[in-house]
Length: 410
Ligand code: AMP
Ligand code: MG
Image (cartoon, rainbow, N blue to C red):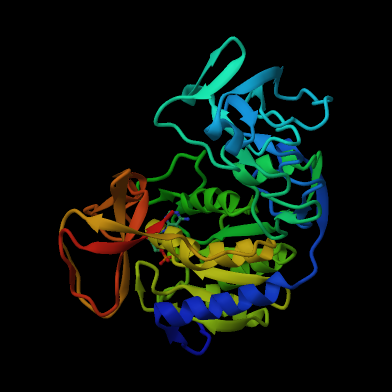
């Protein structure tokens, strides 16, 4: 039997805390940054906060097409329409006087002297006299966003450590951030182990299978902001495994798949031990993914993920993804769970936190989840049908239909 690290098998909650503690540690570590043009910043993690370069909005902004005026003037009597102001057009006539209104378009700067904008739908105009329709009212401040109400010049609009999505890109663009400083993407080595594996371009023998884990991991790594490096398949051999890990240890994170179970030819732990690795846990009471191993080589962190494709995917989502996002400088890195209504009862044996392949759908009324029948954690077609994993707590023996359950999003 290969030599193994002392066994440390944790509950799901304990393992999560261990990963979180290491994520906190790496989050503070120095890392290289680079400046990228804003259109290339999507998915990147901000190294430097984006601050408002001027008040937002920079002027009191009309939020409706209508008439700018003083609310108490218009609610008391008709007022005189004295001009028109388009979005982007400067107002050059000084303060609006009492009893006056100006036709104004959405996005234009409300002129000084006006305190509100009445919607065009709420008024009528006859011979330049503006009056409120019956049933309509107007209060000071209506349909105007004051200058600086959203942000003051200098305020942080997007903090460092935030992953840039559409909303962050929009905010950066509004602040004139032509280029943004982001953290360099971490490089992640992927080492698939197994004598039965062949490359996807090769014709497998009847007793062989294609290496799919390297590709599912690459997809998950990209989604978590890393750069995957798919290394050659590693044979089930102690010295080959050791050499492959040594070759990969220039990366920011090393992910191995397979070879972490109790089999006679599972050499991953032994190879890591020989390279001086420290182990934080050697198993977690979950299904799928129980034999997952987490630790640190003299250089990078590593995770040994079980080889069954669904186990690989789930243990990445639970442990490797959060750690990788922290290495990439992201502040909020926890896996994403949502609540959904269970469509069909699930029965399990208690004792392990389960993450069952599931299909989640939903609409404006909420999310629904249905577990997928599967042939165990090696069932790739179940994985391909799944878009989420239904969580069954360690102590539960069933989840009733119609109940609300936690769901891990991929
Ligand atoms: P192991 O964790 O090495 O005991 O492997 C568990 C199961 O996962 C076995 O059925 C393997 O053939 C399968 N497996 C291991 N690595 C991969 C891989 N890279 N791609 C697809 N299946 C794999
Ligand atoms: Mg194996």
